[in-house]
Amino acid sequence: MKIVVNYDLCESNAICMAVAPEVFEVRDDDFLYLLTEEPGEELREKMEESARRCPKQAITIEG
Image (cartoon, rainbow, N blue to C red):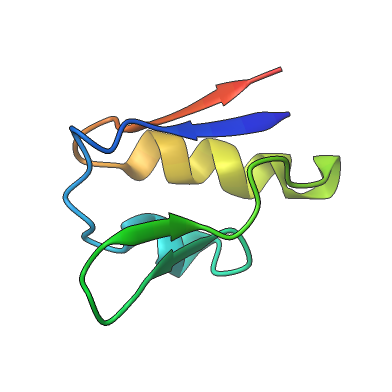
């Protein structure tokens, strides 16, 4: 699977980071960073929750 973030929509509110800190990180500059674009299948549930909980629906999953 591949994680795609629409940075034009993203507010860097760190909800996704709370769900999956191994994939998402909001740094001191207040921007969201993807630590990996293609997390392992064992993280699919966390990725789906991150996408679902994003208030701006800025996260999508491909594959």
